[in-house]
Length: 349
Image 1 (cartoon, rainbow, N blue to C red):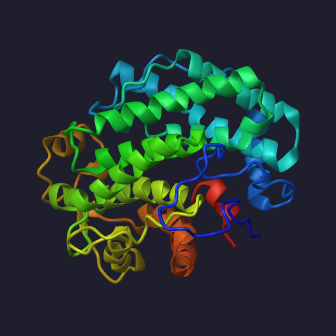
Image 2 (tube, rainbow, N blue to C red):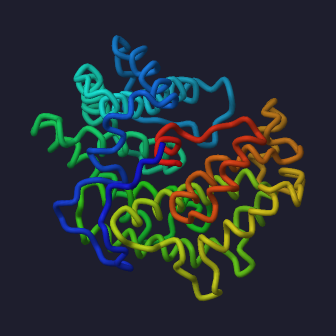
């Protein structure tokens, strides 16, 4: 099945959308009438299981820098289970037109908008991209009062992260900043505010200039010695670039003063994803928390060979911008047995 982005027809480089264009990436017609697809059937099944489940919103999420067994970590992980559920409900609404899914998605979105107080910690809040996509899929059919509430919520997110990036917030040169850029960009496009979009564009370019090195590697690899953190850095930048592409802008190819770009970073990672190069993860990490996590029993942070399955989501995202990566994306999925998020599968050929 092939589902195209419902976006501006013209690819106008860095031409901002109108204030009426309220979506981060997915238009209201996305996936409509494709309920017979096997991926769609999986989404619908998961959404049906959530129809009687109450939202689990809490005032603030916090997992960053915590070890297993810590109270706030476990509470937050439980609350984060809502994130894919909300997106499944919104997808199921578009796939079937069944208002039960719309009503439950709206209930979840409203509960989080009412209860959650943003910390602007991008690691804790990165999963809100699922709620933004769910807003894309449901907003046109939600009651006006709820639409206004969500608009205000995403405006707070966009403005808060953009304000935070004015100076040098914690880890402004690492994957943290990439996640700030993602959330600010998607929220800005979702509410369709040209001024906020312009600021997000500048933040994206600043991160590419700071984080992606001349050879295409990212600062996080230098610091963490882990391809895990390369994909964790590139995935949010790809999400921001996909949101820009949905509105006719090309952020993917933008080059920093060293001549590097998001495109060159993906090219740097590609030999590892293809299995032409191998890497032992975290063998020379300079971050104490990586050592602490390994000692606490989190084996994924102890030295081990990198699993190319970690790049399945990365190249599924890349394929939405650069068709040249469709083949690699498919090969990775076949080789590793892993699949990207359902909305990406629904966008793919």
